[in-house]
Amino acid sequence: MRNLALATADSVTLDTGSTAWMLISAALVLLMTPALALFYGGMNRSKSVLNMMMMSFGALGLVGVIYVLWGYSMSFGSNDVGGFFANPFTNFGLREVMYDAGGEFALMASGIPTVVFVAFQLTFAVLTVALISGSLSDRVKFSTWLVFAGVFVTLVYFPLAHMVWGGGVLSADGWFAGGEGDAAYGPIDFAGGTVVHINAGMAGLVLAILTGRRLGFGKTPMRPHNVPLTMLGAGLLWFGWFGFNSGSELAADGTAGLVWVNTTAATCAAMLGWLAVERIRDGHATSIGAASGVVAGLVAITPACAALTPVGSLALGVVAGGLCALAVGLKYRLGYDDSLDVVGVHLVAGLWGTIAIGLLGSETGLLYGHGLRQLGIQTAVALIAMVYTGVLTAIIGVVLAKTMGWRIHADDEVAGIDQAVHAESAYELASFGAGSRIPRRSTAPADREAAGARHHDEEEVTA
Image 1 (cartoon, rainbow, N blue to C red):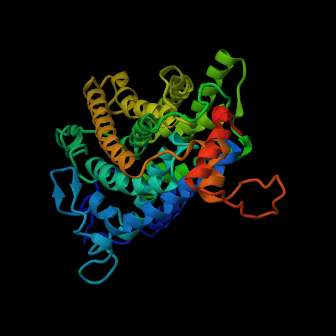
Image 2: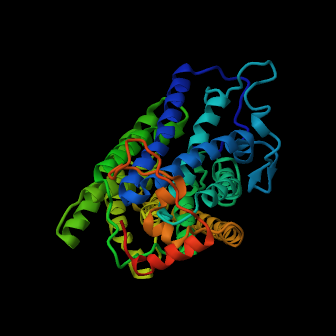
Image 3: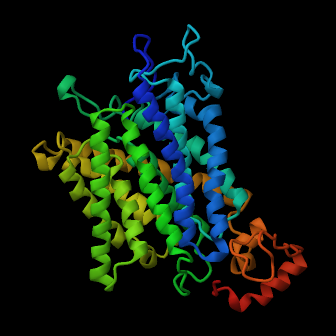
């Protein structure tokens, strides 16, 4: 996406084809959040799958409301504040956004109504927050998660979206921009390498460290309970990603077609790259590896999908798959519990895809003889995004730890967060009828102490 702040125009006419495509793209990206819930849910243990899925659905509900109220205004509204965010009150509740002076739907320069762009961008904000939840499986309070989601999207996501896409300091008109006409240069992030994936991956790393490890992490196997569910989620994510990437062109044109081809090429290559590493390292190519390789490729190509050739996309994808297959093992060596590999996939692939534009970009890359400038710009922007997200997430996380607390009680974690927090079970395998609600046990201090004693020797045991 280009710089889109104040991108409305009075002289353009409605492009019905592009408008239709953008409405479809918005729906495709919205589908990605329930798809993510399936993807993450299948990789969880059976006693915590509902909580994992609820974290995605909770983000969908909360961030959707916030985006309409002040999210769009902070990201793409007028009255820029130092190049870091736009005034949240100028277009509060989408005021003065949807209609022009004549009372007609306002159009952007590409010929699509501004309200359609709002719909498209809302889905990006939702998905970014939902991605973070994969680092927190099994162990955090749902209420604290929702409060974090609202504060994070306001203080981290909206400002970063403005900085990169809304004409701010990391945009093509910001700190690293220069030149004019065909000689112009600046950061490239077509569909969200920094705003979505580096952002979510870095936040996931910080929260995984702050909240601590699951009981039994590194000692007890915590295998996925439903691999077909994860495979289905990966397939739906791939399907929705065409709206994510091709829709970011904001038009139904040849560039959108190139983006579609590049997205597919990189994803296919990444899946093969991941499986190759698995086969060489472990002796087996797994279904979870295939699904994870798909996501790694999708993440890596996101910022670069309009800057590469299809062959360059293949190269980017196969490296992304291999890198992420190796990176997911770092949590065991370094001791942080990134439950579902948000760091190993989204942060690592997001960094690679963002920086690789400086290597593989057909018009800017070092390997095409264009020098080091773009590589330097991409690296600097990626590092700034990491530091910004890391610092702000740490502050938010610590404040919530001191006020609301992050962790559920130890015996609730052993018994299963689905029953303890939501009073539900994903699979009724006991004496309860289909759809029955499982009674919640007492939470009185004496009962908690007794339960804790009973589970003292079981804290390392998983369902």
